[in-house]
Length: 111
Image 1 (tube, rainbow, N blue to C red):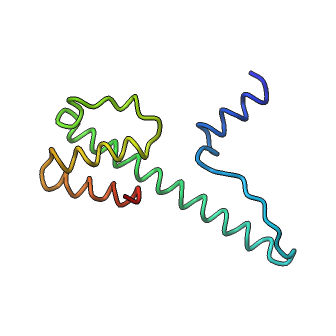
Image 2: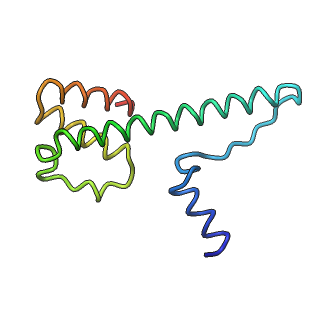
């Protein structure tokens, strides 16, 4: 695997997936402030993504058979789209606890 292929794979599915490079001009004295803000944003984004992944796994564990009777999650490219489909299925086909879980997942996505 070439270096270029490895970099491309890292950007698509590794630690840099869903992140974009930004170049800004700031005063030298405030450089550390910008770097710390960027680190906080990355950490917050990764925590949100991990919580969403945990919610998806929990929903599939508790309600898998009821949710996935006509749904093929492998056709959806990213976690947010899978979570949206699962959340809607939870709200339509589940009980009150499933509805609350689906609502929480949609709030996490921003829908």
